[in-house]
Structure formats: structure tokens, C-alpha cells
Amino acid sequence: MITDDALVPEVAPADMLAEVPEDGHAAPKSYRWMPERSPTGPLSIVVSGRDRRLVVLRNGVEIGSATIQLDAPVSRTEAFTLRSVDQAGPHWLRLPLPGQALGEAGELTDSERSRGHLPDAFRIKLEGIVQPGATLLVTRESLASSGTGTRLSVLIAEP
Image 1: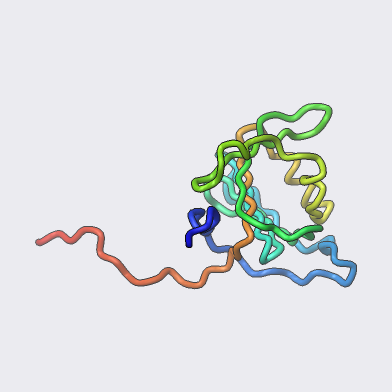
Image 2 (image 1 turned 90 degrees about the horizontal axis):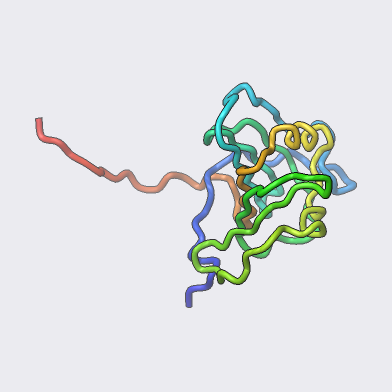
């Protein structure tokens, strides 16, 4: 039997977790921030429920990562795009993924947004660069690579 979540692909690899302190919230220094690695381009944020890790990519290059404390387990993969930011805060629009019902589209609620806790310094830096058009992928899968699989020749040319 194929479930809706079986149709959603896994995500790219990232570094493993930093340690989380006894209070369960990310330690103030448990993050990396290197925006100079890719100063411009589209921004993507990936959250792994299994790793409790958030990774920030700009133009496909990792520019930051942090531990994230989640108040509830991630039950499936979901995607969002930042529609706008106003006095009420950011408005993340839920995007249905392949295998998910179209009726599940809508906005990320304040209560859903408040389930994740990041180191304050990291959160402030991230909020400073997130603009409408940014994407957010939340997955229950690990970001750690288990390998690239078997080599495959796509094109062979005779000399």
C-alpha cells in the first residue's frame, strides 16, 4: 500500500546534530551562520523533524544551520512559501505536494509557527534575510545522507 507521504521525495544531506541542552531548547551557540557563502539568490529553509535541525540554503548553498526544538513531532512532509510579512508577522502559504490533497492548502497558523524554537541569535539573523518568495520544507525525514547509491552512466560517447 502506498501512502501519500511515500510519494514525497527525501531531501538533500546536511551535517549531523549539535547537542541539545537539558532544558530541551537549542543552546544559544548551537548554530552556524555563513551568509557570505552565497550572498544572493533564492532562499530555502529545510526543517528535519528526525534530526531536530534547520538548514538555510541560498541559491542551493548552505549558509546556515541550527538545532531546533519542536514541541510536537513532524508527522509528514509539508512545503510553504512566504507570501508576505506585515505587522501580524510572516504569512507562510502551505503548498500541496504530490500525493497530498489540494484542499490542504492554506496558511501556516501562529500556533504551528510557534512549535519550533531556535537559538535567539540565529532566529534574528534568519528573520533579517527572509523575504517573500522564500520556501520552507518541513520533513519528518533525516537530512543525513546514507550515501549516493550506485553509479550510473547517463551518456557514453565513443571517441
